[in-house]
Length: 167
Image (tube, rainbow, N blue to C red; front, side, top):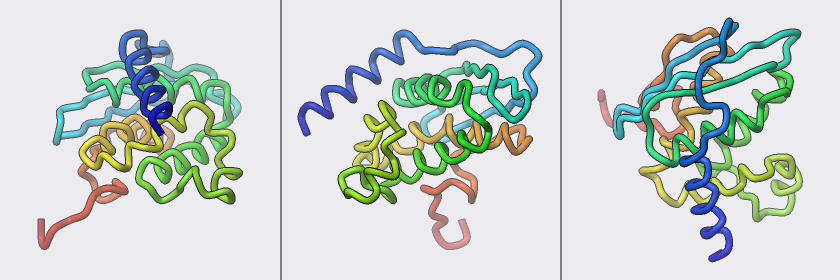
C-alpha cells in the first residue's frame, strides 16, 4: 500500500511538472471545455479524429496537480486509439476512480489489465474531495466526443453528483 501511495505521488508530481500533450491541436475536429466549480479547475481539450481514430489530442488550462496529471495521462492513454476504445477507457477510469470497480478483485483486475499506469488513480476514491479533480478531463473528453461544448463536474451526468433535495 505504501508503494502504491509513493508511486501515486511520484506520477502526479511528474505529470504536473511536465504535462504531456499540453497545448492545443491545430485544426481540431473536436473540442470541449471542462469546469469544476468546487475547486476552480478549468481545462480545454482539443483533438483530431480521422477514420474514428484519435490522431492527436491536447489539453490546456488551469487546474490542480491531480486534474493536470489525470489530463496528461489521459492524453497519453488515448492518443492513437479508436474512439470506441477511448470511450471504454473513459467508462473504466470513471468506474475505478469512483470506487465502482476495484482493481484488487481478481475478476475486475483482469478486465482492467489494460488500464496500465492509470491504476495509480485507483486510490482517489478514498479522497472524495479529489475525485472530481481526477475525472474532469475524462468528462471533458467524453463531451468532446459528443460535440458538447462545455461540461461541469456539477452536472447531473457526473457520477459523483448527488443532488440534495431540490438543489
